[in-house]
Length: 514
Image (cartoon, rainbow, N blue to C red):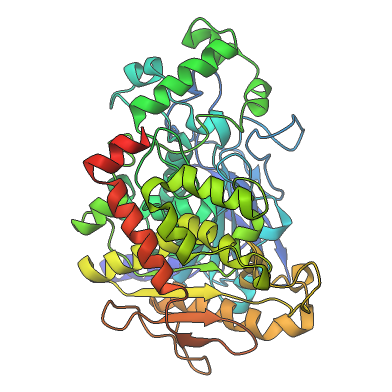
């Protein structure tokens, strides 16, 4: 009898995967497109509305009737009020090529960017179908709260919380989504022990934060950060690359927002229409904070102590991130003034390392913005994990762009922020030169897929990507048509910036930043 029962159990596990799946919370029905089974708008937590506004996501309530999951749910409240955005936004999506429920395919989970004030999984740029087809992997994407509905901090909110913290709700949403995926993905043909998270910009920064948070331990086994990293020190007045505030400083911002909205109590604040916070979303309390709980402390210091989730990482940034961000205004005079304002005693050294150069149309000066916000963050991440971790680190530099003629407006420009997304997702219609860019897109997509499968991007027919180590700090230059391994770009300039960040962590540097 025991043998019969075991055989029946194995048969049940081996059943064909249909578009109707019984999740742990209830049955859902998706749709099929040329063999790809797609499920959109799966709830993974209770709607964060009413009394649940500004609280950690609560487990989703189970259902019995089959829930239709054939279209994206609304994205989180952001910008101007719109039907496509809603406070009830905690939903995820799954694309699976699995034929049977026991295939144990690797899982790649997307976390969108948008500066923690914008973004949603319904953005066509983030459609996961092409990459899932290319790699034969399960893909998922998670909605999370943004803006002040995702990150508001207040003394009253901290007082009511069992951990005495507030803010970081958007990060907790990401973790709740990952936890739901981990518990349910086997039913979609995925492997709960082979989950890799990836994201770009604020999504890449989120990946970095999840790697540094003890609350995310065990939720993933690999991480890819595109133009991310969270290794700068906290600062009362934030700048790109020094985006973090302490909980105490952020709580004071929250009190000012409460006053601006005319609310006299937390109850009044929770009763306000969610659209009130859309218009406020670009201001304070729209970024994660160092709360000692979700984000335990300065991530550089935590990594130096080996206190992080040690998983293989594939991390990098683009060659002209600075072209997408105008810090301190344009022109040489504004560049010098803004550099002196932000970097204090290190301004002269940095102006020498990153001079304003008319010959390259100002790109070298833009590279200071690139490296402060993304380059140094990623390079420092690679160095620290290579020093204190056991898992492999793969560092890249994305530089794919048309060659503009000297004297034209775009001369001297490299790859701007976000250009890499279309290459990874295999969206050639969103590339500037679809046919010319296809070879690099094919290679990058395969690198990402291999990393999800093996924790290593290398594979047959691909240019060899050496793992990063501090004795031989090689970077993969993702430049078409054939990527190549070479030295870290602007390494001597990065070392000057590294001196600044080290100084900022001294007593003198902390006092100056106040």
